[in-house]
Length: 193
Image 1 (cartoon, rainbow, N blue to C red):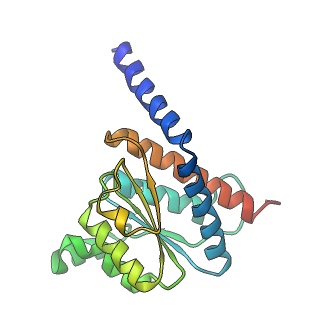
Image 2 (image 1 turned 45 degrees about the vertical axis):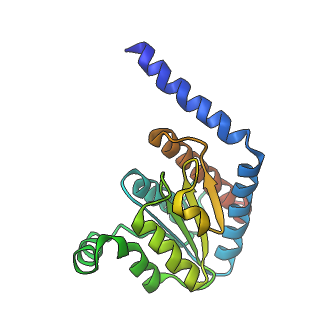
């Protein structure tokens, strides 16, 4: 079993190495941080969505921004779109699961807000539909996906494509990148906190 544990760790480390030897990816992370800071300073919000583990990542990132990362500082308006289970089940039942996030983007999203869609394949129908609705609304669209970006690559303003097709490795990189974004936003916006 120890050899299998080591194999998992080695795979994760190799994936992180690929991600962070990618200068273009790092430039995209910087761009997300800069655009997010501008949006928050302009009293805009960040909405996030995903399914399964990606929904957990969306909620985790929202909590780091709206609560705190390292510093005691004012909260930032960030929210994961799936946290209202009554809404999610009602809309899924009445309109279809693929419309759940798009309908909430229509209700809560405004021009200048940010939508972060997280999908390891880039093809989750409800996330893709939400990204399209966000574009129509004038929101900045940010995608976190795997290797080829799927359908989201043609929709998103900024795409983070983790260079892997292995779902757990993609998800591990997504939360690492999410943490980096949260830390840099906090440090830039609240340098004295």
